[in-house]
Length: 239
Ligand code: TMP
Ligand code: ASP
Image (tube, rainbow, N blue to C red; front, side):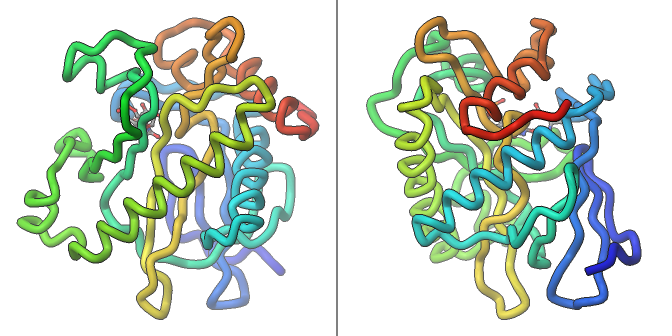
């Protein structure tokens, strides 16, 4: 498989064609951004860490029969994925209050929620990715009700699989964000990444943050947290 024509650059990844129309080449960059791109920095080695961690999570989901776009890891910062047309929604799953939930509803950080929540955010940089209701999603024709039901069920199933895998490793899964896309046959498929950029991971003993909140909140040692996650998953960090 060869890296082909450049297709798209996002905040954290670049996408290329391959010689196979049904396979794309995804490269994880070292760039870190927060607050809709207003804060940005290059963290040398973030790309390889997220590539390895994301590959680990997608492989775990395969073992549980959950489909996704990930096919294979091809280098320290690159993987092969299925092409999808991204649904412009961020699907956020929350088990413990943190981040925007605390700011929006006044719930103290760290409070376990009585039920796991699923929220929808409209992926639109100009609007700052606002929280939207299912009625808003229908109004904007972003997804059909059956597609929302599918994504919600998948999101909750993914929470269960991830939480069960992380608990014995002393990692608390606080919340995370998923993105889905439509594949060539119109089926919804989990896409994007699952990494410390898109999840909140806390140490079960100390509550130490091991995710992008270290960067967002300027706590320092961002990549030490990412490295610790990879090592606890049994992976080797070369950076
Ligand atoms: P939030 O509390 O800031 O809304 O974030 C919820 C989860 O979604 C958290 O795990 C971080 C993740 N997230 C992203 O992956 N991308 C984003 O742009 C934002 C705002 C959050
Ligand atoms: N992905 C978001 C951005 O740069 C930030 C975040 O994860 O908080 O803008």
